[in-house]
Amino acid sequence: MKALSQIKYLLHNINFFILLCLLLNSCGSDQEQQRLELIDNQIAWFNEGQPTFPKEVRCSWISKDDKERISITGFTGSEGIMLLIYPEYSNIKGEYKMEGENSIMLNKKEGGQLAVFLSGACKPVTGKVVITEHDKKNNTVSGYFEGNLCPKGKFILHKNTSIRGGAFKKVKYLK
Image (cartoon, rainbow, N blue to C red):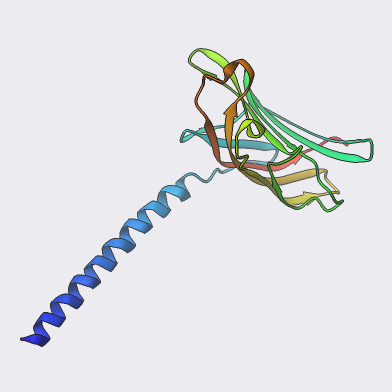
């Protein structure tokens, strides 16, 4: 009788473990669905679960006062995003936390008006841009980004927003 009770207990735990695995796998599938398939010279991101694919992408690499600055911008009409990165080395691959001069800025229509959201307006500041590829021969960069963004200026009455699953692929820059 005691052995039967132990078997029931074991079967119960196995069922629980299987159910937990199925739930975790289903969550993992949702995240995989949020991966963006990009073509060369494209940037896109998720905001409030919706993907945005801009019509136009610009990237510039500016050297000024012994400082390097990379600006990646995507426009969708009046809305758009800008990633601003100040690399410290000639090998720019790596992670850039949104602190100091590094930032993510989003212009988006909310409540019928264009609002400005900035990573640096949040307290504490979160987010990152990761450059995974830098092709010096073809002047392109690839990577991904995410972060919490807070309203700036006269838009402070809007709620905070976040960028998830952002990516850019072989974005051509001018130097």
